[in-house]
Length: 142
Length: 110
Image (cartoon, rainbow over all chains, first blue to last red; front, side, top):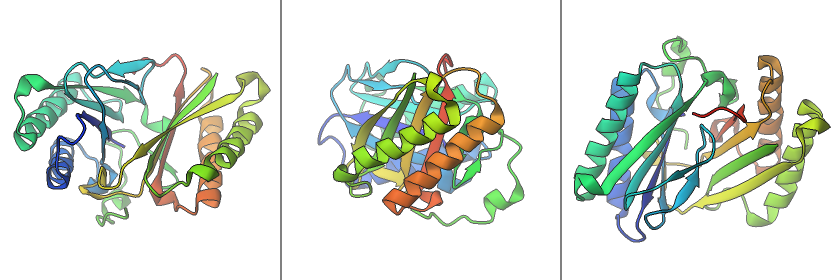
């Protein structure tokens, strides 16, 4: 966690663009939160606008109402302003790297309690309660 | 109702393995949550090679996001996640580091 699913039109982004966006999302998220870099998951799903995807951190589905859409799933417990700032940063970087107008990119972030998720065999701590060992292994394991 | 959305990287969970994996995971749900929780459904989304990243690098990580009936206490939820993760790793050969698994309350709005 966090998980960012990017809905994009088929064939719209090169590998280099996707990789750059994934790195930028990691920069944005980790620059504004306490998450270690190797916890930031970014996946790209090719689909058309209007595509509905399950809300992995809430109920029902999320409708991608623009050609490019970012569906985020984060730990809950952060101030709403911070959540808004993270989303704004993601959309700004996405638009710039993909080379698409800002009105073609939208998104939302859903949140769920940290204790409802297990990663690397451990239940996640609440934001701000991360133990020091979270940051001892900065290498990406895959 | 119990429902899990499994987002897997291409090549990491063979399609032929998924029914067996789903059965093993459902058995864990039944054992931990009880039969009253109902049958478990599993859906699969495959992320194409070059379309999944972790920390900005290519990823092998599977993301398994579920919904379970409300009212699960912390210890039970942790046992559910731990046992499901153990089964996932046993059957797929993945390590714990390559799995993120969650189970949220059915009524949780996000």
